[in-house]
Length: 160
Length: 291
Image (tube, rainbow over all chains, first blue to last red; front, side, top):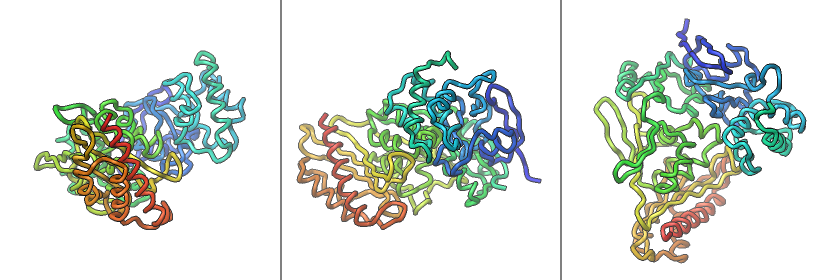
């Protein structure tokens, strides 16, 4: 029986304790142990950004992020974006603008965009492009994704 | 199993003692963006991961007397947005802003970039041009060593991450009439390996007409991050004019040995890139040094 280590973190606002493999990635713990499969593993190499989650508000690639690094920190996944059953303004804008095709990159893009709008509520298009440069989409060509982030930025945080 | 244990020491001494107790089977993890991938691919097995990210002060970026010091846990993102580094080490701030993606830069560290010893490492190339030094801590104490002495072969540095760690880098504060610049070309603007990267630094004489000292670091054109020393020697004492720069860029191209690579580009194209990017980096450095 191999040794496990205990991870205590805050996950989408709730305290969570879980016994994990010492070298487990955050993506593995979220998906396989905590059942939060909204976080997608695309390339599994820290390139595509599909696995992006926020750790203390900062976007990281959870597929190459040691889960133990999240100890005593706040991890936010796409499951934590909606509130009381209502969609986040970014989720609504992605739907309305048709920014979702196969959907695999969407959770990562939503979290990257949420971090951007928190730091910069009204980003320019070049600022949006730079912010999402680590989130690859192979369906839409980004036009509608950028549009959706712009629309969400105009709707303001109170309309979430 | 990929790793037997995971510990987060709160001092450098505690980290070293933990490594010692695992007798070569422990390994330092900083950001882990390279190491976690190596573990996932089973390219490496580790007895204990020793996470140095909770050691207080190890992420500092500060001016100490005549040097800028950069802690081992400083991320590429923190370096790229540091006003102090934009002022004193523009080549480094620029290099770190071009590494990987925002997500990688939020986690990956300059120290990890150096210890992983890839000849294309943007951070190492900039540090070489800046004559940076690294402080290595091990059980015998702490020692400052020039960055240029750290690289052995592709992926192998002199820092033994199973027994020691880099704690800090230091770079001499930029002098008047001195500046640095970084150039890089890749297939895309994000998440792409450099085809060639170049960092230049020049120190001009008092009236800004002659080059007193020059550094030119280029990657990946050799088994380790490369300094074009012949070109540097040539530049010292020359008039800082277009003709000199063209000759230096030509010399740098001849001094490097780029290979054809499916990941990057053909040898001939990469040689041309060395010439063009060296020229651009030198021109930008000289212009900035003149203010």
